[in-house]
Length: 115
Length: 115
Image 1 (tube, helix red, strand yellow):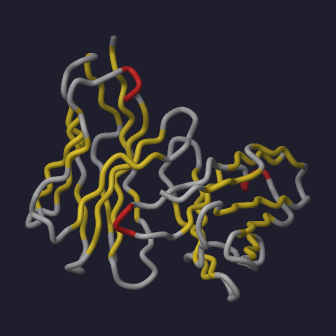
Image 2: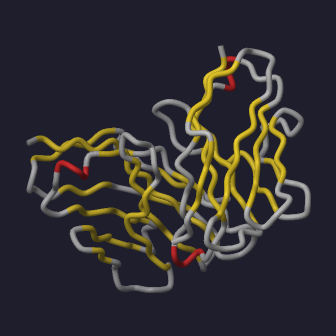
Image 3: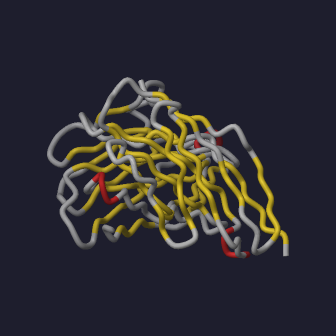
């Protein structure tokens, strides 16, 4: 499967500040990147789908102005949580869309804590 | 719309025994994939096994096998000879081949292995 690098692994930020999470596909060109959010003891929920060179598609209920996604190259997609609040504290995971038949791989995730 | 349901929030098994995790899904599409993912305490998502809907033969990967009942829309995971390292959250997921090929996850089952 694809090799995915996600950084940072964990971050603590103050309420009102912004945090950027990077996801890199290391061994193939990812035209599409999925971004998930996972609250404690819950499942993964798709937040948005980013496409290289175009605007991201957000799932219902996800604020696009709060969760800014940039997919400027085939190897890098970023998620910026703007004006973070404690309720944004969660585990964020990226996953590049590769061959569905092989199953997707996932980044190692970013634990965001907003204080 | 796709839905995936895991009705067992928690399961436990004795080491070396066999355990079966349940999953049901719903889709109106005829071409789709089904997956089981494992999420250990590190929270890294790991692909366990995949099944193509048009293949009648159940997928197997070493100690892991599935019972795919297409008409019943059931996709259970059997773990044989359970090992301590199998302890994790297990998520069932589906994706249709058409469109964005997004994964839809079930709620998860926490598997405990008793030594």
